[in-house]
Structures are given as C-alpha cells and as structure tokens.
Length: 311
Image (cartoon, rainbow, N blue to C red; front, side, top):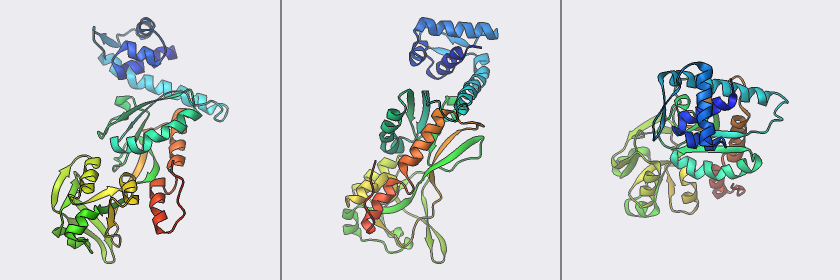
C-alpha cells in the first residue's frame, strides 16, 4: 500500500477538496485524483463520493480513515525511533487550540519552531469548540478546560492561574472588596461556566455565587468588559498579564486566592512512540512558556523579582 496514497486520502478527508489536498502534498489535482483511484483499486472499495464542488467519504471511506491515520502515525513514529531522533520533524502538523490563547501565546511561538524545523508545516485551527482529534484529523489539541477520561494522552504545558481583577475606574466608583462575601455588593462579569467562584480561606474553601451584570461565552469579551470598568471578573493571568503590568487592571482579594486546578494541556492520540513532529511541538512549547510561564514571571517583577525575558 503506497504511503503517498494514504497521505492524500487522509488530507482529502479533512479538506473535502482534491485540489487543496494535492496542493498540501505538492501534487497536481490530476495526480491527486489518480492517488485516490489507485488506493480504491488496491482496497477494492469506493472510498469517496465525488461531486463538482467537493468530495465526501463513503461509509467504507469513513471506516478506513482511522486505520489510514494509524498506519501513517506508526510509520512516522518508526522513522523517528530509528537513529534516536536523527530524523528532523517534517510534514504537516495539524493543531487545534482555544481562540484567545492560541492567538496570544501559540502563534507568536511558531516563528522559532518553524525556523528550527524548516521542513515542518503547521495547520492551525483556532476555535473554542472542543474538537474530536481523531474525527477531525488533528495531531494535537491545546486545551485549558477539565480533561475528560479518554484514550488521549495529555501533557501539561503550563499552569492556568486565575485571579480576580477590576479596572481602577470601577474600584474608584464602587470601592475595593476586602473579603469574598463582599462581592455580593458588586457588579460581576461571568464567563459562562464560571458563575460560582471558590476561594481558599483560613477556614477552608468558600464558594460565592455572584451577581452577573454581564454573561458571555468569550474570555476576551469578559476581559475587555472588565477593562471598560463594567465590573469584577475572574481572568487567567495569561490573558491579563499585560494589562496588570500597565495598571489597566488591578488584582483584588489577593489574600483569598481562587481555588483552581486548571492547566494548559496538549492532548494527542495514544501512541507507543511519538511522531517526531508531535514531540518537537510539545518540547518546544513547554520550553517556550517556561516554568513558571513567562506571563506569571512578568507579574513577579512587581514583587521585587528580576524582570524576565519575555518571548
């Protein structure tokens, strides 16, 4: 079975377009079509439905897709194992990530990764929708939500520390709460799913249900509403660290830290041997973010620490 035919089929399953799939593999539409026909001939089944606008998988194609992906992953992993990593990462790495985090902290880090590995290409999808990696044909998903039990492997890239903050203008008008219970007298901004805020106190965890003046499903919208002085909100430090540094936002209730076990995770399908391109991505961003991550190190300088080098 020809590996190029398999690669074309896997990309076709994602793009639903023969010309685009062929372009990604540097072959013409005619050659790409011949790859599909030869693969179908080898298997003795029809794998795709062809129309003038797009291509879709048949039931046999859908059944064959995970096996094709597994074969390609095994081949790449085997190549990476031979020579103890002497083979440089290459090919297309498909990654999905949350929109805000991806734009702020993934895209800037790609320059050094792609400079180091010139044969590596990134296919990046930024969305806040949780995507099925296998069904979507992705190699890696970046997630900052609770991980469900699955066959996926997870590697922590950085902690996702969350703090309570407000704009100086808001605090000048309404005062600064001095304890969690005081939040009932304040306007609060909610990211959907985070309506209850739990604080660590001397007597144990305390959960407060605050009054929402604004609820939204977008983290950047919550942050921007907070910047506009609309109320108090919970934000990840990776989202607000620059605003805190400039004094546009002020941390509050620092004596009552939020209880949070959230992290930035990279998840990927289970494999005995990681493909070189997957391993390169994971190692690069774990090092790029640092421990603690650069967005938290930047905040530490205000406490008398040495200003960090920010990527």
